[in-house]
Length: 313
Image 1 (tube, helix red, strand yellow):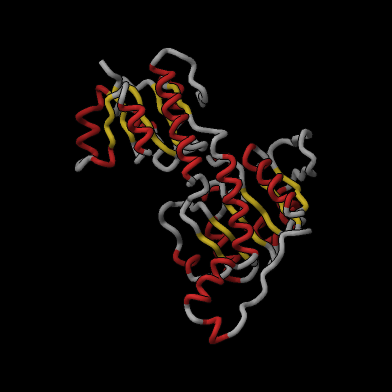
Image 2: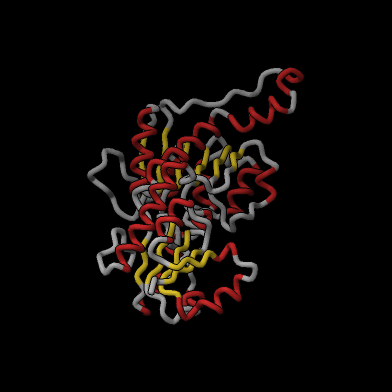
């Protein structure tokens, strides 16, 4: 009998085809009544394929008495109740490593789009303002600017390499100094913000980093400063960020993530000094194929009795 999997979000057809060979798939997004589907298949479900946005709470896991493993499509697993999974002996996996290039590229894209006013310029041209009002205000260069990175993990360190190619001066904050890297470590986040022109948020999400970047950090960047977030919306105090942008206490922001996705506070949309994108850091064909392949490898390995490639628990 093939193991049965509950699939929480749309996967690439390649992934669905690969898994369909050895598993019975229950794609929840295709169900007319998802609650009924869960009730009907609950006793048979041995695996869940979820994502960072869908997650798996303790209450959700407990719908499935025979659940053995959860695979998350993404590197972040803060939306999965890891403690509860451990208490039930449920194996949790994710897809680290394969997102690094895509997400780091998005960090640089937001940095360039914001400093060079790309999104604002697009709106300016489309509205006919170039011919009517003349040239836009000047943007700013990256060369010689100070970039503070919050979280020098795989993504943060790759982003530091990319930013260095633009002749930026790198320093970083995190729970621990990493002597293997050539960048100065700053153990005080407010001081890092004070000493940076741009602040890039790359750390992990979850309760331990919730609102790590508060009003004090945001305002320390100053009216010419810029905040870029490619981590999780929960890491930044979103209300404080919006207030600082509206009041001029912070100059600019580039945001790929939000606290209550896909809902975005309307105030951000009224500002020209903010670039907003819908959590697309890993949204390249190459990255999503690699993520899907790793999902397949984890699930196949577990149900074949082999060690999973990328375990969380």
